[in-house]
Image 1 (cartoon, protein in one colour):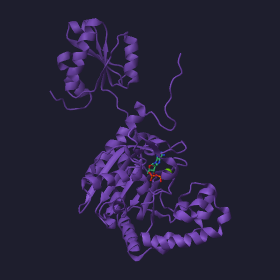
Image 2 (image 1 turned 90 degrees about the vertical axis):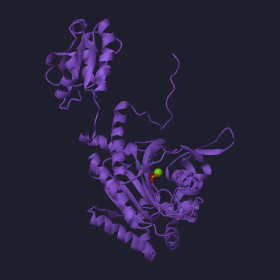
Image 3 (image 1 turned 135 degrees about the horizontal axis):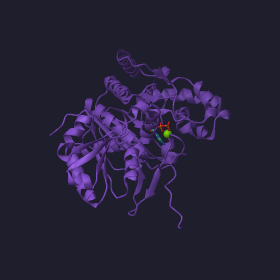
Image 4 (image 1 turned 30 degrees about the vertical axis):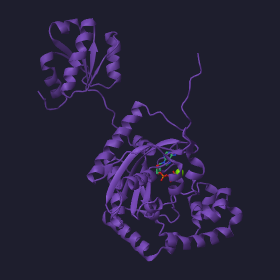
Length: 426
Ligand code: ATP
Ligand code: MG
């Protein structure tokens, strides 16, 4: 036998049980987002590498060591998107839908980062991202938080905590940066290599270090909130007031700078203590300078992205949140005539909005019944020579101790709807 080929490390196959959980999250999210007036956008997974270098920031983990970049056959340098915001802004500028208007958008899809794979951290992972453009005030930041809170509620998730910080403006951050460097220089001998390298170029990134040995230094660092300019401070306070008014509790974490360089003012993360080390389920903030930075007209913006893998894992821990779809009935076919007739009878039932899994490939009653059971069907519909002759079906209620009744094919739709507690369409 030839050696089987395996998937790329850190890139997962999503099998049906998991996909059903994902579809549930997706449909709940879609409903929540449309209730707030957000519209979906679908963009390429490949972009020019330059887009990410320019937007995410050259000193970030993503751009320094995580991007899947390559030269294509025409010699263009391309990158599999590591996140969604840069592409949305690129598309917005290119299609002219950002300037002088308010946009509420969302997207969903795979992202790619060459990280060390572990639980909750993969090389291909999936995000649902939400972006707003054209609103400068903190009301829309609060709206983003309300969306998340409603989403957790509708998904039946609890125990998610909200952390907030403000990064101020470019100017206020410059002052803070000076103070941070002074502080870190005093501790230079204890900094790890990454931090030493970033000390001059991008010291704020040091606060984002995942190295446990750095955490003590980070927690003793001066707080960025003490350096906020007046408008940013007001923005942050108003944001907090909106949340209080909505009854949403939060904690302030002044060391939270987020993994991307483009954030300004409000940043936030939703975390859980139920997923181990990869605890951030959703993260975002304001990025008022990015549109301009990528060549558009100055446009305030804010957004967030949630990690599907982590959210799905969390949902799996709340067993009542997970819904597996079972067929209403499994059609069991015994003999050649039944096989022929069964396909068409199943079609008629599906026309009446019943979910029918029709047995294919032949086999005996026992094997087919076993399969009906395994698929979680409520009913087994038995069709054999005798049933064909008298135009009936033997209906076995698999949740009622297997009680069996003979039902005429003509009355079958009505019968099943009634048993399922639905109003018959016929
Ligand atoms: P982390 O601090 O966990 O590395 P991040 O700051 O890099 O996260 P963002 O770029 O803000 O993450 O992405 C938003 C969300 O996407 C994260 O909160 C997380 O839920 C998810 N996410 C990010 N990277 C990965 C990954 N490699 N695998 C799975 N999910 C991820
Ligand atoms: Mg990361």
